[in-house]
Length: 171
Image 1 (cartoon, one colour):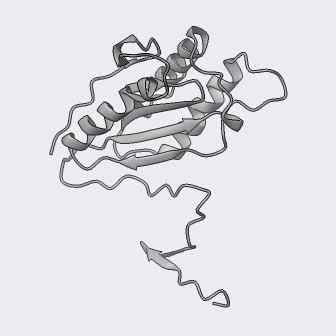
Image 2: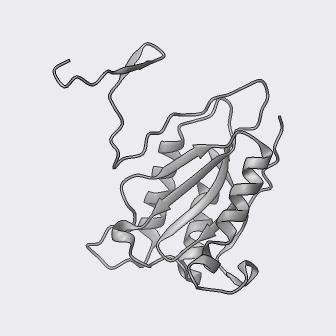
């Protein structure tokens, strides 16, 4: 290769080097009946503070319920981004990227975002959790985001958070 960058191989396919500005979505790694739980972060376009309100909260809940290939566990909706935990609702798991694109499309279509402005950034960040401890640790960190941002003094005061489905860890 002329660039001198080596390409990695995964399942016989060459992968180009990751773009540092774009997240890499590796897909689910299933291991002997272990839970598949993903931590996902999705940001608004230009990080505009459009989400921390009752209307956006309702729109997101409806979109997540409508997008049935994954179920949403715990979530926190910040002014300019959303953190959520999700798990496949079907086996074999469908594409996480397609699921996120689907609910982003539904929520954008139903939002009150000013015309001509995109609601969401094009991509998202995700990590497959490796253990129940990881789920608990990430949740503790996520639920304190509104406190760290100076929006509330106690995470329980943040109105735009919750849990749609109880995601249980099986190792």
